[in-house]
Amino acid sequence: MDYSLSVATWLWIIIPFLGIIGLSIVTIFFEKE
Amino acid sequence: MNTATIITFIVYLLGMLGIGLWTYRKTNTISDYFLGGRSLNSWVAAMSAQASDMSGWLLLGLPGAIYVSGLNGMWIAIGLAVGTYLNWQFVAKRLRKYTEVVNSITIPDYFENRFKDSTKTLRVISAVTIIVFFLFYASSGMVAGAVLFEQAFGIDYNLALFIGAIVIVSYTFLGGFLAVSLTDFVQGILMLCALLFVPALILVSLGGLTGLWSSIGQVNVDLLDIMKSVGIEDSTWITNVTSFSMIGTISLLAWGLGYFGQPHILTRFMSIRSVAEIPKARLIAVIWVVLSLIGAGFVGLVAITQFDVPVENPESVFILLVQTLFNPWIAGILLAAILAAIMSTIDSQLLVSSSAVAEDFYKQIFRKNASEKELLWVSRGSVIFISILAVILAKSGGNVLELVSYAWAGFGAAFGPVIILSLFWRRMTKNGALAGILSGALTVILWGNISVLNSIGLYELVPGFILASIAIVVVSLLDKDPSFEIKEEFNLAVGHSDKLQQEQNKSV
Image (tube, rainbow over all chains, first blue to last red; front, side):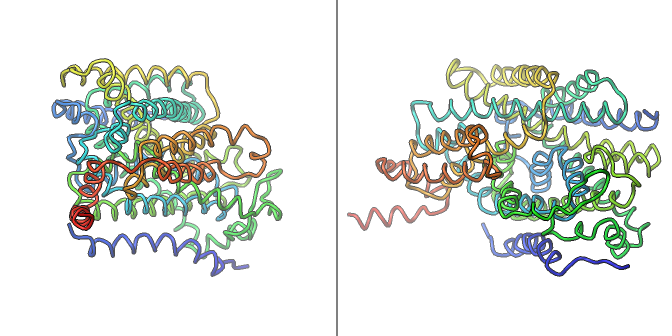
């Protein structure tokens, strides 16, 4: 039988991890000294 | 232990000592010794902060937790990743700038200079907190290392403890901060490679993610659900229906709150070459932490499929996978990654503790006019002194995870709110800071000893952090307004230098 991760589990894991990488990339362009 | 593995270990340890000798020649002042003369580039600062942060827990504890409870164990990883990001985003830049404006090289130094505390109370209380908590923290790392090498390779516990301590103390003693940061950099790369390589290879043999999910699903489908809690009972994975709780999840996520108060991580922010390097360092640090946490998660998940009977000590799954699946040369390198994780955390903690002894006690209280050279040797002496105390404590053993969790909560609650508010709230006062440190530390110490509170099952960092924040705000507001000089420095440090002038003009 095949098993897979539920959409909710994927989202709980992916959103925080990709979110902080995304924010770190975005802020490189907006933070100028 | 296999000869190939021993040779790999010796080469690794000699490499770390080589870095110590090389940086010894570059370390001439106490600022060099404790902050590397604020010369770290974004790569070294980022990797050093992350490697100092992640102890043996990353390669042993987290895979073990996920091996037992499945994806539910990822909540703590999510909390830590988000905490890392927030610390780099909101604390790094301001702390780097502020500590330069008020000319501070340690956290107690910063507290004293930020609030112009001539009584030295803030410095002494924070230095004592650092020495006490780090002594236990560093010795718990030594216990973890020695126990693991005793279990995995049959080396005598005391011998393992002795060899590990000699290597860490040697390079920290010689090269101070630069040695610690550069060894952290190498160790950080080694840790990440090991955490990606081991699960990736097993994943391929399982037929990719689809194969992994199917193999795990056959063991217990709830291991694949982040909301379900699973445990091992009588050699079987059993879903623990009643145990998923909001409080449990909040407690795991709350580990991320601890970051704002960890002196061994905060000093990395202070040591970066310039503020302009911070956004790049932040990206490097965040990518490292996400990849290594996901790698550690996968180590736990693939391990579920690799052993017929659940392993007795879940924290040893990484070691067991490496020993069973890789040839001795590769296994030597991969197992050295565990040592790297443990050493990169202990060395940074030893250095921060020795700065508390040399800079915050010796120089400030006993020998105000001590020369740079004298301070440098007192600092080196302190590294040895604190290491001996940590080894003595480690010899008596102790519960590693409990101590780490306690020290993490202690620092997070005692220093976290003080650091954040001191960087963002101009109205904060010295008495507010003192109230914050004391109430944060006391809450953490008392929480576990009051059975009614302890039975709630909430990580003591949460109430400690909240109460410390409230104490800072209430006491500061009751206190009189900070002086013009303090406010001016605040504006200079956070980049609002025009604001105060405008306010002055308005009031005139």
